[in-house]
Image (cartoon, rainbow, N blue to C red; front, side, top):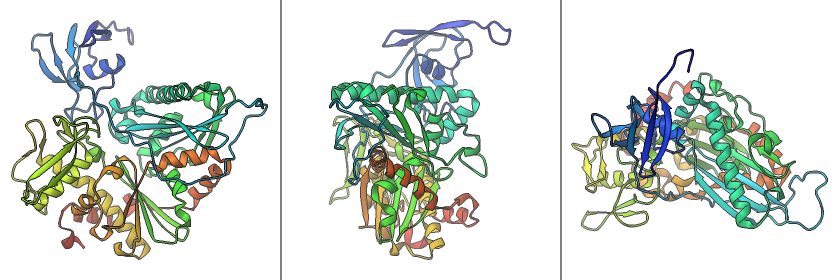
Length: 510
């Protein structure tokens, strides 16, 4: 009964697992899957836009393949879910630095020679990476990772925030806390230690992920003037957040820098000692958001661009994450014939972000795509994988946002793109992308070709540093206040620059 009204309930059976669940009439099949514990692929969060949540309905008057987000339960139903298992590539290693081992320790800890451990977590929009460290020498003794279980509620942070504002904040917080706790418990078993031997855990995430994990309201984050709920670091009992470690075990959360420049960017700054570099350095993390930091001689300027999830395979017709079956690289041979590689070998099931970049660069060279992004017809890569004209448009929107943000940052500092000495690219996408393709399509300007250095999961390395040395955690907080923030939405020139960057002709746009 809801609001005094009796609702019919129906039985949904999921094949091939033969799992059943009772749901109220009117529930979408997407929500039914969520309630049953599945993690359906729904990059648009159930908005009916991406078309990736399809299921096969085996019973009903008109069986067939339907969108789960727009099909409501009106009777008992049996549906078939995809039986294809995808093993996703999750980036765990990154560029870091050595620090003195000076972790926080709870009072009264027995000095009986028992191994004491620490944990660090990089909470990303798409993936979660966790690390278990020896508190004595700082060694990484176990690593674990998983897809972010919030993904069925939307591939990007805006969809997640909208779900939270619609009353789903408890669900989002609970899902991610349970996953992190499970990762920690599994690492403890792998390292043959008790979870109670873990005394401290540091977590870093982008602004949205940090807010959702800490159960902070996100309303101010997604509405002008786009302010985070708090820019303070958070230190509390891990048990208050569903993380089962030492009874006095602490949870440390690095602060966000501003709106959509989060603790993960701060962790990257910490890991790379960015403020100490004398060279003019660009650090960039390309994902559903693109965070950029310009640095020279201690001065740092940052901004965030809404790149969208296209570079992670979402909103692309045959897009998928970087996992088994994904086309990850595309090349042209001497005779200008296309060839491609597939993660895990075998037949291609889709294309991931790095493959999308390569393919677009190749089609530009072949003049299948022109400098405006126009393509006469959809391009068939295999019998199952197609690049559509809308896919090219989605890529243009993503690359234009990042390129426009960078150009405005350089203008504000009074430097040219050629003045940038090195480009540190953090994150999984940056680790696997071909820099030549990134420059060929204008995701990164051609002036930066030859200066690009992948640094992997630097955010995870920053989280490690913060938990290994309490002084470094507090140093990160001080660094956050030193970073100058550029709000692109307030810059009148942003829209014109963004439109200029939509094209693929870099010479014409400068």
